[in-house]
Image 1 (tube, rainbow, N blue to C red):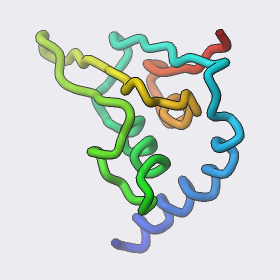
Image 2 (image 1 turned 90 degrees about the horizontal axis):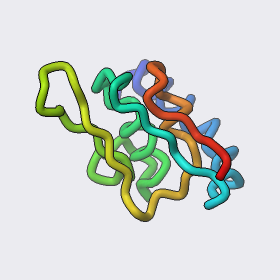
Image 3 (image 1 turned 180 degrees about the vertical axis):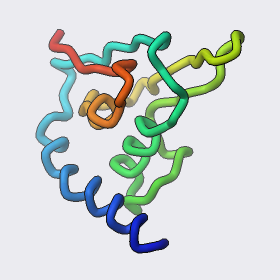
Image 4 (image 1 turned 120 degrees about the vertical axis):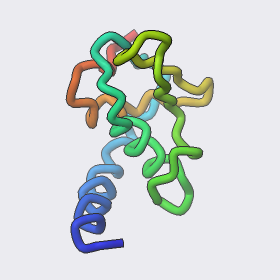
Length: 102
């Protein structure tokens, strides 16, 4: 892991303590797949938060982003055990993911 990678990981880890208190079912994730760029920032942030090792591991992510049928489109799905903490929405720069109160 390079110095820049460590800095990014530290940035993620420093904000994670805020999300433990936020994880609840009074919030839901709003998905606008048409705005998704397919960058996977959401899935990487989620994987870092949810993996016991606190590593970037897409297999541990509660959110999946896959190419859609049409070129340049993406499908976003969320696992049933998502805690709606909002970390994925926080790192989505395209407005495809937001959290809303129920």
